[in-house]
Length: 578
Image 1 (cartoon, rainbow, N blue to C red):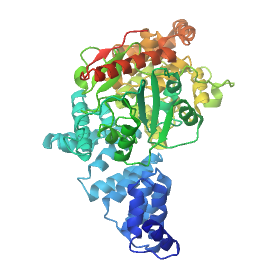
Image 2 (image 1 turned 90 degrees about the horizontal axis):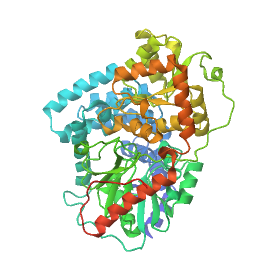
Image 3 (image 1 turned 45 degrees about the vertical axis):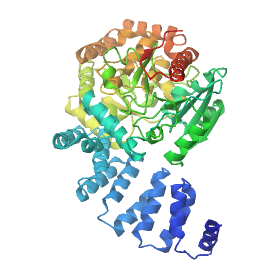
Image 4 (image 1 turned 120 degrees about the horizontal axis):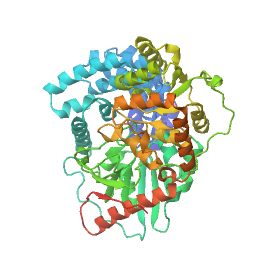
């Protein structure tokens, strides 16, 4: 009743002393639209109150309303020019809108105002990587190395995002970083005893699996998992989904909602509330599909709401978390000897760890190279990865390929103008005419898959491979060339090629990678044979056999659940082909 009285008083235009408390109460309960309403009213009534405007901005950012948050944050920095955190949030908003120069400007301003604002250091690196500004990345890395040499992991681990670390740091450092991040989540959730005793498995008769992701919408992960949820055996499993991300109303979102036994939107909930929900739902196996990628919610898992907790698909590395029991992989992505990179117990599926949708539509539309800015008689290499995966090393290899194949062009995704400019200038500096770098506009998934057929060969990135992008190419019938590295993120495409029956497209060194790419352009018959082989096996190979893949994943879940039911601790194991 008190809250309703405050609301009525507020609506009459009288901002009571309790109005701020009301707005904060909505915010803490995750009722963000209501919180935004009241914070906005407070800001209007107090145009010079920094706190009111900062709270409004925080509410907008938490709802991922980045465009709406920018003018609010600009007003905040007018009121408080020295507030480093406001510049940090501006950088985040501009970065999400792919406006990288503005993002970098505000991150740099935040660092100048507050040199120990670790998040600004981490974010400016990500912006430089996505801009393909490798000189800036090198400068950042030198500064980071100097800082890490003088400070413990608890501090330097905050200065780089784990996904960026996969591109720049050795495997041992990535593991240390993940452990520190997980420890911080654990401490925030209640300290060293946060997990407490694990809840007992529930006697439903069926195994309840809960998938947690921010990507249940038109997103690469949803493209891969589109057929996963409905393919589960409902005689043995109940499937729950906990959505921590946006609802875009897309066909992907609607399909996933429809094919899960229960779908819950928890994006506005606190971690505590969602953990309580998972416990109440009696989930036996809780599956994290984000790791340390955008909108991660590992803090839910840190509260140990399920007896078995699993890292799967979304993040190509260890979580470093004691509260994650297993990591889903395969024998190519993680061969014997790779166990030390992970704090989780490795579960190796046959063929490949990556699920795919065997009903993914490819647009049946007329295709012409001229319509995409591609020379008709050229040899088209493509790499439809986001720019942040393109580093100086692999781009140098691509330029060597183009120098040796004069009729070749390189077809990339247009993600942001800054990256495109840097890539064109880097080509010119390498002796390759900048017009030989062609950029593709973003397209819906069926059209994007169809345009792969205008290319001749997909060139994989190195430090972090194409993941969904690699599967897209193979599903569209385009051969892909990769050179695996020494960490999981750099071995994904090799895993996919094995499962697609094309291990001959795996190079064993960058020199061999370059030579193979050149040979594909020079020997049209050999390349044609590869395309024919892919086309003949595409619909039957393990990579695109969704029902068979799900049987293997379910066998993994059953083993995990059985061990837990028998009181046995998590242990690594492999699933036999079925």
